[in-house]
Length: 146
Image (cartoon, rainbow, N blue to C red; front, side, top):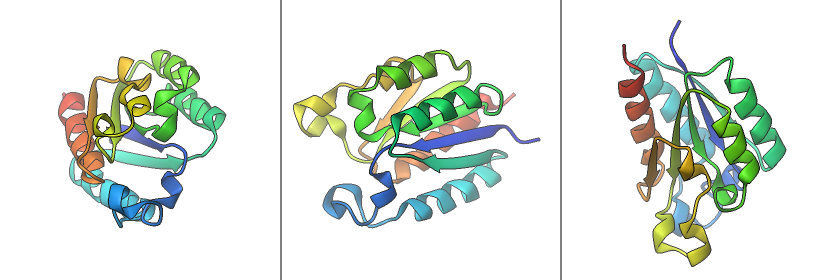
């Protein structure tokens, strides 16, 4: 069975393609999920894509991934800058964690420059638009390869 990658998206990413397209682009979350599934299949990976506006739901999914996923790719959205709970859940997860941000958070408001999730992530991809998810999948495939 192919190694599973859980792709998590936090608050407001369900509005991708509608919300501030000058920052986040015109692609929808469904477009991103379709592209990720296609690339993952070609890399010998399976994907499970989820989005929630609720911190606790994201925490539960991370906890559940301990038994189901070899890697987590997470775009925590605004929770990047505020959620110790997500960090704690990721710290209890033994697999690979990669963090993705569509925009370059370091070119934005000062409060966005800090990410709790980055303390746990093996790598952070920021500022490459939705292509960042595909870059993360490629990296996950290389790190998970036998």
